[in-house]
Image 1 (cartoon, rainbow, N blue to C red):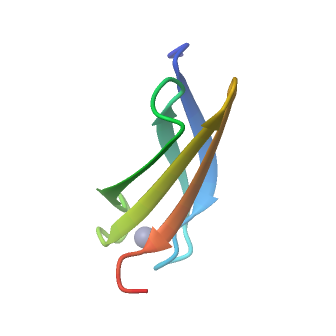
Image 2: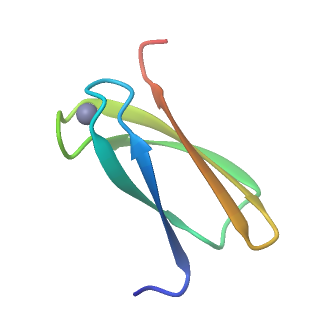
Length: 64
Ligand SMILES: [Zn+2]
């Protein structure tokens, strides 16, 4: 258990598999980075936004 990371269950925008995405609970109010899906290895665009103690994560496709 990592106290400063937030894990969210999301589905991969490419293969639809449920995946656990970990985002740091502390960081800029919004950031975007690229991470590969552990199932299909295609690159997600991970958008993280933070409001107080809440962390919101969404996954997008790189080819949108
Ligand atoms: Zn995938």
